[in-house]
Length: 143
Image (cartoon, rainbow, N blue to C red; front, side):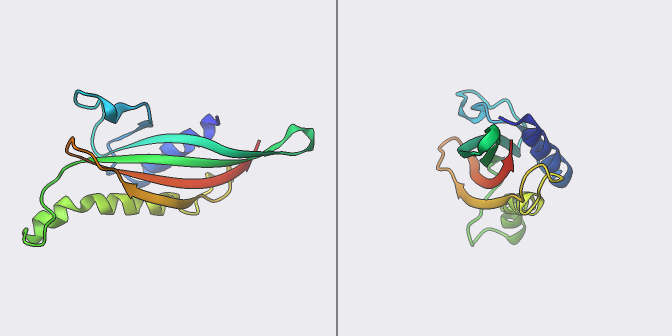
């Protein structure tokens, strides 16, 4: 795994999305039976190499997937009968997700990798009161 990519993504999110209070490697923090050891909203990062193509001389083209687990504490009602300010506050998580997207979509880490592109964003079903989104970006680089 490439720690430069991990650190570049962390630094980019820290700079471009100040709403995130905790940015870290995904280590199962949200699966704790106790209160998770993070500050909310948080972004937990996991990098995978689902495919690698080897060229002569041992150089590889690596297809990398950067999965972000973005978690929020529940912030209020979102139903249509709730007052507008309550709904806006409860839905500010969508603004944070949009800022993450603007920070990472087509960003190349200063030519560290090919421009990133979002391939998926989906909420998790959870019973613990957290609202969690799994966001996946994809890129390639030579190693």
